Length: 136
Image (cartoon, rainbow, N blue to C red; front, side):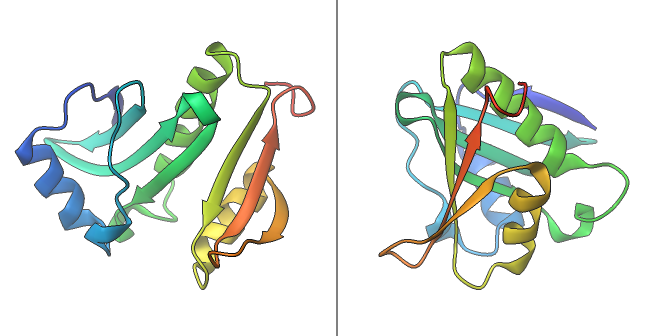
């Protein structure tokens, strides 16, 4: 399993991502300057993380169900890569939101060390990760 930076989202990659994601609508539009990392097993993207450095926000993180909760730790490796890149771009805190009802996502971010800041107006649970406090 390799984590790679994806600089261009080809139609093939987009189709592959939509195939692994439970909801194509959950994929936020990618803007210039965004970070996008994919986890590839064999020739297939099985997970991704998407972040916007300008606001230090993780906009999406997803790992195909088949590759969740196994010893590959794909989600953790994707998040490690993303946090390192955000840190290198000068972020002091990183923010993320988890959709209401996504218990796996809530547990994942909490276990990683993100602080739960409550549910926002949009129904997403807001998380914050302090890079200085967490030693990253």
